[in-house]
Length: 187
Image (cartoon, rainbow, N blue to C red; front, side):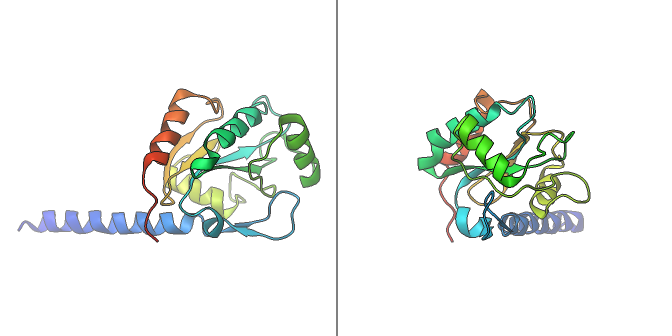
């Protein structure tokens, strides 16, 4: 057999194993629920689900997307789907409030019931480990508030959508539905 072919096959297998290892570790992180005290391990809590991870802000032109994100949660939540919101003040100080203020705003203004987590940094060297991993997996860090990463049931990042893509965008809906149709991975 050709040496180059063997090396290529070996490299491909290594990359597949590496990607699988990265996928299984992507969610093995803990974050506090918004205004909460006890951290939640994302892998233990959300393993086997399709997730839409979104960096949010209360004083942004895209803030009305909270309504659409909650609609996605209501529409698909019973099928093994969750929106996970992570407030961030990284973009022009558009999330200046305390976690309690953010929680009150989201609940009273947009009726948000999907899981929201502690305020984090999502870009640059101070980005939280989850967002560093999401950027590494996709090659794209959030460019603004309401950037969306779609994570498959097996923990792989399968798509990302910039802020301008609204929660009811047909491409986003199709990607969510495609992932929900896939079987849950064996544990």
